[in-house]
Length: 278
Image: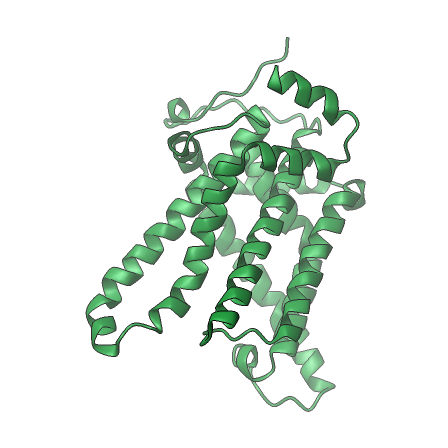
């Protein structure tokens, strides 16, 4: 009955409202994923409060813990996105998400390396051009601390150039269960502005991220108020990111891409099956 009511109401919703309705319906999973990702981001700041002698002893266990937490967070989010495609607002257990999400882990890692390479290739010339017209005397990496406005401007420009890759490649991998190479081949079938709400959400998250620069939030907070602001910005950023990725998955799943998505690899029994049309 609950899913039936959801379907009836969905007809009157915008795409963003439908995404928010799914996130609201599955709030325990959303809270878990956002909380774990936020803890990973905050971990560096938390370790600065540890005594130096204790930190030396705990350095490698801490790195291993953070890495494990990051991997678990990623797998949970992939499982969440996949089950959003398969089940919509139906709640899942963390074990269901882990079981489903691990199927996509290495493909997403591969995509991350490709994306990072493209990002670097774009940001370096953008940085050089902007630097030429300014008095900034720093390298790109160093500019993150010495000239954060320049660093984030270059980063934002590169992200806007790669917006189709950022939005649609992960969604294609999750929805179609395709390899990274095939997802790039399918990218040409997308007209970016046919998903206006998705583009608007991405731009909104980008603008909010840039506005946070005006708050001058320290990387390593020293007071309670700074920690509250830091946590608030991290959580907000994670929620916005999840809204964008879920909307992207829903947009990709609404298209008829003519791709044979049947599972053929040895891990197929660990992946939830695609629904068949009646």
